[in-house]
Amino acid sequence: MNIIPSSRNFFYFLFLIFAFASCSTQKKIAKSAKEDVLSSPALQTSHVGISIYEPATNKYWYDYQGDHYFVPASNTKIPTCYAAMKYLGDSLVGIKYEYFDDTTITLYPTGDPTFLHADYKNQPVLDFLKKEHKSFFLANANWQEEPLGSGWSWNDYNSDYMAERSAFPILGNLIKFKLKSSHYQLLETNRRVIKLDWEITPSYFKRFASDFFILPIEVATIHEMRDSMTEKTALQKFYIRREVGTNNLNFLYGISKFVSDEIPFFTNNDSVAVSILKSDYSINIQAGARIKHYNPPGSAFVLHSQPTDSLLRPMMHRSDNFFAEQSLLMVSNERLGYMNDAKIIDTLLKTDFKDLPQKPRWVDGSGLSRYNLFSPRDFVAIFNKMKNDFGMDRIKLIFPTGGEGTISSYYKTESGYIFAKTGTLSGVVAFSGFLYTKKNKLLIFSTLVNNHQASATDVRRAIEKLLQEIRNNY
Image (cartoon, rainbow, N blue to C red; front, side):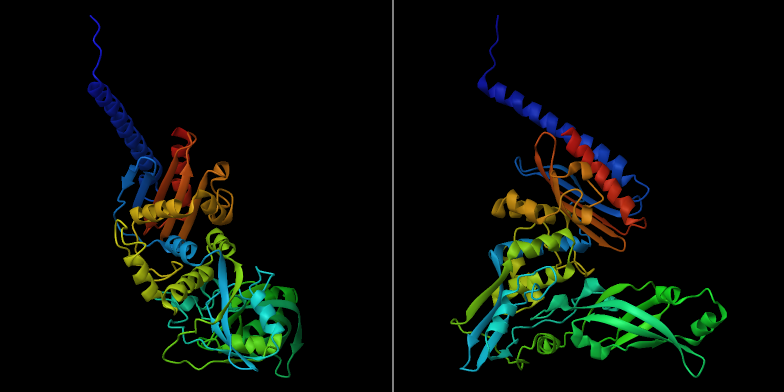
């Protein structure tokens, strides 16, 4: 006798098959995660969170401490990127302005970091300033922030990755140095001095830089005693440090080789940007006094500068902290009418990110701060929202794939199949993004590692091995 199963039994049978397959997948990934990551010598004593999610089924393939909080480092740029994609439009607002009278134009800065940045040859704002033969008045009362972010390491202020934030950034808020030539002179005191020929950009900062450097006594003595110690070897331990809170530049001996360098300048509430425009570009501009209320008129003109994604792509590819910080401030200016991290973050957490699995502690745009705390599930949720709101085509243009940007040495065989953001601080390695498996299943993953004592490379290789196994097997 033939027994024909009822439709109810048939669907129950299918359910059991899918449930078994799902359970099997979770067990296999859990085994790989244990072998490749959790038991790795580089991570055994660290804190690890791993979440792997399939949007099509709304299922987690694997979730290890996905609801725990971690310092995310530059993965903080992920919510910043989402906010910029949503609120900065197709093109960045470079400046807002109005004609005050026949001779003066009032400028309202927007925080655009592309102004005179070396990455952007086309400069509409500069063209406008040169074309208008008038005086300019910079009204920057919309700046309600500090130059350095909450929780930033103060003694990194001299490093190019920690440029000051400002309402009217210029040239990336960096001074660029290049040593063209140098030669020794012997002083009457039998001490040696190195005469320097600098190329400094912008040239405004030449007034803060000396054209000679007196070697310390012990170094000068060594040079007199050793004929083999040449001018070239002396310059191998030569570096520049800016004094805190000023633009005074000190030339010091004893750290590392100097060929060319970039250091952040002291913005001083945009007065330095104004001075650079006067000195280097002959723009007749004055810095506006801070006023209590800032509200540019609705009749103010808007001048766009660059395509928004031309800012977001380098922000994510090279993990540009300055671009990330200014992007979040630009979002604040668009949504709130002023630039303030705490206020715009609070607004975003109550609106766009109100449904995140764990409420983050989010304090800056770049992830330089160790005050930031996110869970792996938070990043999965943000990426899922990003995919649904903007589509994978746009995401693929913004985020690096294997062999590009900060993952240029990783996932080279996975190029075009992984799109993700790294994050690195001392003791912190983060990596979150999208992965297409060989069966063309789209996964969202987030891996956060805190308090490791290994090299960041060892940690990244362990994560890479796990993700490659998932791609190849599913």
